Amino acid sequence: MKQWRIIVIVSGLIILLLIANFSIQIKKRSTKNKENSSRTSSAVADLNTTLRPTVIEYNSTNSLAENAKNVPNSKCWKKENTRLIGDCIHCSDYEKQTISGCLEFGNIQQGLCISSNVKFYKSCPHVLQWEEKKFWMFTGLMLLGLICSSLLVWYRQRQLDKVFYQKLQRQVESDTI
Image (cartoon, rainbow, N blue to C red; front, side):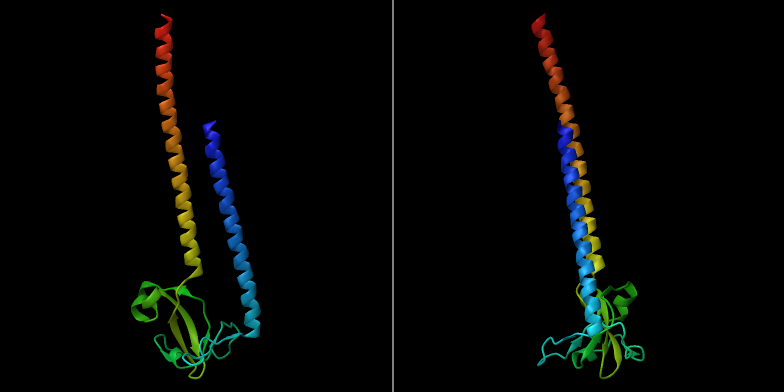
């Protein structure tokens, strides 16, 4: 009877993880669809017109970026309008030593200063794939811990039941004689 409790708990957790996985996949698909529609329209996000220049979102069909000069540590994004031309990626050890954008968060995103036609790298806070990998690692470790602790409890309960039945058997044998 007690084994059924463990099976129900583990199967419930597996179902919960599958639901979480499907919801994450659906969210990814919806954000990809939104990105594809915004890429065709080339949306403009004005962060703060008085203090910062305009940032134009990622656009894969940018002809300016092909001819741009690559200056990884450029600070042109502080003065000029920019266009983000790459995704946020995790920095390698070499990039952490050479590119100043990697120092703040350990992640960089490539951009393009429109006026000076210079490619640069800017720090960005989160890499989606890395965060998802950490989430699934944590979830897997917690599931493994649940299974191990459930098995230990089940094994210990069997030992205690065995001792109890031995004592009960000794009592029954001593009463009958």
